[in-house]
Image (tube, rainbow over all chains, first blue to last red; front, top):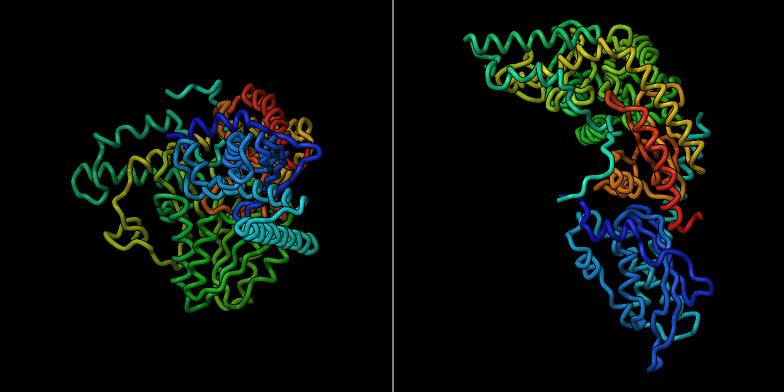
Length: 169
Length: 396
């Protein structure tokens, strides 16, 4: 059995909604402490007929592995046109199920990256517009920020190590 | 049914090699006809025993050892475990200090961690940006209670070849200062059969070699143990392999290993020249064709068949899968590609920032690599990197 499902390969070969959005309503960035992948997500918010906020457009950029790329591509398709409050409800289990084949256990965290970046983009949109931020999103934001800071710290540690190695010669 | 990729190009010879058909032919009689147990006294047993001893002679010959100094094992991992743990436990009364480098194969790294838990002290020598151990560092690391130095001959990841002869001389010359003899072990899983090896010229007391990296079958390997070396076995039982490795002998695999050694001895020189030319073409053109690409490892002190690159702003597993979809097999040191989710310790040890280790690609060539295959790779790789960079947040 190949490691990755047809669905993953399909998204990986032709990822959807790749790129930036100029004048985005919100942008989100998430990193993964385990592997060092980075995800950036851009959000354009619009209104539906009832005046509710919806995801009018969504784009992403990533320095990530095949699962991260496929997952984000899938997520953008899923939430495009949806209400913001519904977009916040997407869970990693739902994404993994749609990818058609159980992921190797050490690859599960890759699906969280896309969801985290989306949450951050929505958080950014809420804060820019001084809107009320749901308690759960606030918590998520803190967790994601902490993770990002830890990664930055780790990168700095590696850079220090590099300097040390170079100065020892 | 899975669609066939457009090509079938294997560029991962450092992971394992196909078994040479000439090796398969030599092995075949030892499955159903000459199947005896080397410990049996009857003719079946004698036949197997004879094949074993003839194989031992061939393997010993390739590295300039005596027949009695070769112990067959099942894998390079087993040989390395036997070398480290066996020497550590046999000599622990003399000292408990062992020196290795920071770019050893994971079996040495993990072995040393385990030995630390057992009360041994491990020094892990740093390497420079090319992956070379500093000889001054080694001299300074040797202490009165040092019992063993173990250094990989050539890195399985970046292909850098250590100056083992000089290192061996240093270890030998330090003996008077140390309380007892310091043994010197090297892992030649990536070098035996590719470049000339001589246990005496290299001043080594123990040496690991593996069959499946040199067109022999998996399941056979050996440890050279210089006469007089104090070492404890890991496996106790029927007393096979001079009591150092009890287990029914895998005669067919060992016959294959020996045949592989014979072929390498004959063809090594010419093959190394051919591969070096292909390797240098590959390195030159990748660096020319792909912006923000780097070579990892040493330009000259390098295995004839190894290349290892880093590409900024992209992730290695994505490169591997893109190549695989086109029928090209390669490997990466990216954290994403391992169950441990850590970037390659070798790439970090040569001072790569994690983001550069993240976008690493190892292409290793071998006996069946053709120039046309390298040309095809050189055609598609720049496109793949370009495509992945297009979706990267760091660079357009």
